[in-house]
Length: 192
Ligand SMILES: C[S@@+](CC[C@H](N)C(=O)[O-])C[C@H]1O[C@@H](n2cnc3c(N)ncnc32)[C@H](O)[C@@H]1O
Image 1 (cartoon, rainbow, N blue to C red):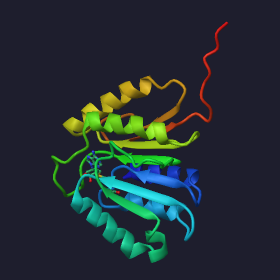
Image 2 (cartoon, protein in one colour):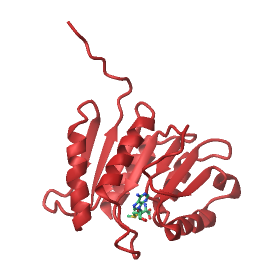
Image 3 (tube, rainbow, N blue to C red):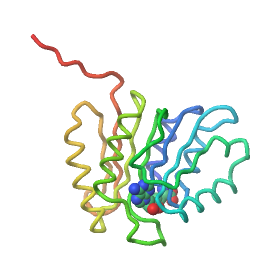
Image 4 (cartoon, rainbow, N blue to C red):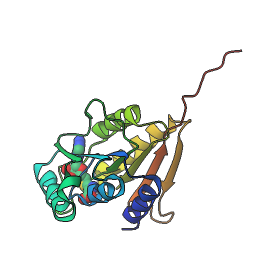
């Protein structure tokens, strides 16, 4: 799982204790736990994790409880909800999407193009200036391929963002990683 390892390296390099992060697709909680270890201290840092499936949130909760102290668990909020709507008042430094379906779960409960794009737009609105969006895509299944092309169209509308795409040149349908860095300042339109 090179793409997952790479995503974790990028997050770890970017994150500092005390930051707020959102895991938009909690699944089995591997990413949520990794993020929590990067940003939480007993008094600082916040993690929000979303999944539409109760089982996924239960798996995430179990993983967190096994690996984190009670004091750190208090700084994590798990939402059985679609990532289309984020709670008001949260301004994360990083929002991560690990798209697709829960490994070993119901393949029909995969992320979907429209909701993913809506969510990414909402994530960019609340992301702090200089913040990062991380999206792992799985174009090897039909809905994942649709998501990939919709996300690429969406990315083409973002000239002021720094965007990187990590993929296997000779295996374009394998999982790939996209990162977007939100500009530090709003670009001004200058009229002459
Ligand atoms: C590939 S799995 C995530 C893996 C996870 N990050 C981990 O570390 O185990 C994708 C997850 O996205 C969830 N999902 C699908 N649509 C969603 C939505 N609209 N909002 C939030 N989660 C969604 C699925 O239920 C599934 O658990």
